[in-house]
Length: 629
Image (cartoon, rainbow, N blue to C red; front, side):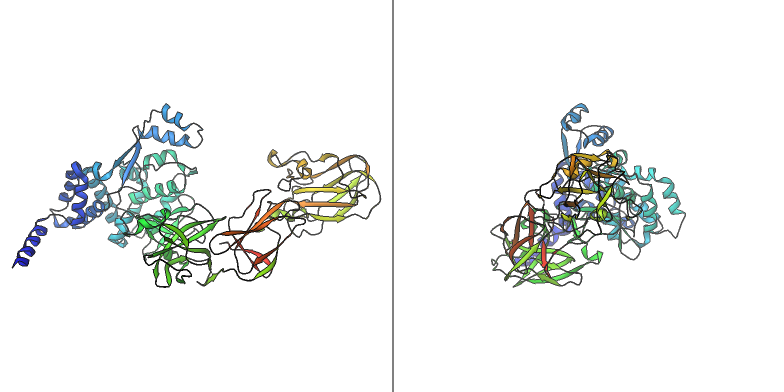
């Protein structure tokens, strides 16, 4: 009997409650602003025809906590002007003080948003959804995430829908006159009219008006402007992003538009139209959401992965695999999650999380052609859960567990990607006794360049000359203008002594830059002569006649090769950390080490502080970098 009474009491309590527990929880947070939120709910509760609008209102309200505006207490046009000058100003505080923007204010939506603002947002969102020809193909759940939301970030709120509709009124009218137009085609038309952005960093989230006036910022600001404009016109658009590229410490964001088949098609505001964008391999791609994506344990994740307002979209891009990898170390009983980290230089950055299932970890939609390190946290300390592995094009995992010691030969710090090293092919070294080289004799012609290191030409000639020069090939004999690209030149006499002299040659450098003719004789392999164009040369006036018996020359390079006389240090991943295999001074263009097989390596040029962003392996005696290219 007592249980029956208790049941009836609970039933009557919940039956009499007007709102669901989730809505009631938000209303309590609203405090004195509760009445504004209730006005919205009442607006759509009285008429059954508004049931879908009521669901939309509940969607916005339930997901409102945690959303807020940050703004300066100043007219938006003043703020936009400041943002326009922000990056170029060395004294940002002076700019803020001069424009009298005051302090940055923060207003939580749940305690400050008005009923009129929410109702107006809902009405305009439904209007375009129902009126546009493609609207009937946009499901309600897509509408809620990609058209309905009243904000995108922490920008100050404004009536952006009316402003965007006014800005693109002609296009909006044309859409309604074309019953065959799709959301993707409409998106392309709007995208072509959006203002071109200048890429700048450090710009805060801005409202539609500020973005239209400033048109400066990073990729986040570009995607937000596109989302504002598209959503105002009823075009379902999301913001997709990768938090960190596999070979960088930063990520990228872009937009995607929902098409009639349910596929999101990526594009970049003003730069790339839908269907034309190429996304490089990524460990993870997420989609920003207005609704909270629940994971109660996320507070135990690495900070970079603690984002409740995104969902995993990697699988939609068709370049990922669900994988299960063995746990190679003892885990604490309470360990529930493991994480995938990707390398940049000699650091590892968190990219994804997975669930521990006994002796394996299952990761959903891991991006292919990416190097990963599995990690878990034990007593809040990051610990490796296994050895690094490469997820290849076919979803196979290749693990890198060091084993037997072997000799290795290294000749590069970074991969070769230097088309200009071939610019010396067909170049010639000439000697003369007349300053105008009217009596020039060819001492040596370069027929091939093996790599970005010093090459030696032995000269079989006993004649003496006062002047000697390197003459660049012209575009008539070279695939492109060679610009006399040479990093270093050295001339030697019969005694093996390095000859000195006054630098002579073409005076003009490319774009009047600092890479002038003297850079070929400054002893620095990282600098080079970059002439203004064809028929360029550089050389020495010895001041007196000399016999040249040897020439050493180094083509223009990025400092990525092993250079004689410079100091290097080799590291390998031993399972827990990067372990040094020692420092060495190069006595040629190669280094010799004893190193473990099947290991990951980094080679650092200590002299020039050069390190590549990705590790390499040894394969068939050659260095091979694990890149996404």
